[in-house]
Image (cartoon, rainbow, N blue to C red):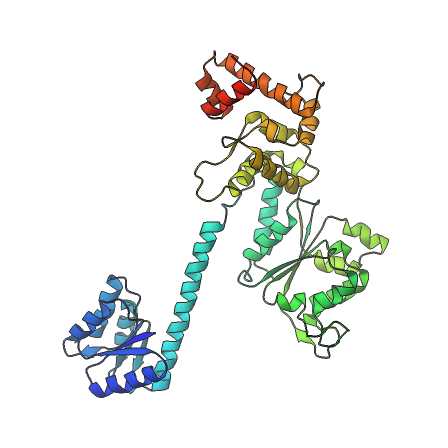
Length: 453
């Protein structure tokens, strides 16, 4: 860092400058307010060690002037006649610290190091906030009662250290809810590790969870930290907890209750501070009855449960969720967001969604690739959705002739929509394009494709 020593005593300037230089910083000196002002004006001074009483003024005025000019210089005020009133005045003016003469070099260097560390953290925070604001999509707000209750429960449990069990069908977003709990908790600055219990081979589970010592088994050429230690001061999300072998369930229970782990092949017990959030799409109560899941672990994990309703039971969320997913995949620099044709949206509303939000996300990603002119049309949806929507009474699909390939039938559906919209618009193609939510050029192209005159 670049340090400016401001003091009217030459001996003090020399002593402080020597100590700062020896610590690896660059240094300048000033004996008056005027000299200090000219050096501070350059804007390259990181820390100013500033005497309060100077021949031509008060050092606190330099602090005020620097803050008014929006400089990043941190001031450590130095004085031989300390008083509480002077200290308060300096700190209120914006000084970072306050010391009295005689100044001990070790103390001053410690104060400078603290300011340097704080400045580094501030820069990191600014960078992180910039990255997050540039890359994080806008949050989706639920509308159905079931998901509003989920949000309420998340807000209640997040600030506590409680374990949480999240239940729901596959694809409902259990991992997203777990992440929400972590981000709203006091542990949000710590790690969030998400592990699928069914994806780890059974013979590696104990080593992955609790770690292992060097030489614990043939391939253990180095020691390894387990998931509990890796997630220290953070959250460990155990997805598909119902697939965990019963042999590991008892050890998991002991870790949750005792907050200690013993690495495989190790002798030393290690304390861990890791929050556990588990999730399952199975009925764990049935698993307990069948003897495949420990009753005590079930009650320990399930002391606070959050059940996520399937997408078919929250149809009111679908329109806004579709638009959220469309906007989330918007490439940077593209101003016009994708829209969706009303008929295509009607098909999405009519679908049963056995794969829940994950299935909807996949459908939207596919439609985004196929869409033209920034609008998702019915032809951009998967064939299975159209087949499922046809008998449900979705307008524009029920009257189609069942003969021909699926593509032919979709083309006939599109032609029927175009013909009907043009008729309703009295032949005004601009109006028809507006009603269809597409550009006029796109309408002309589609009319050409269908040989409309």
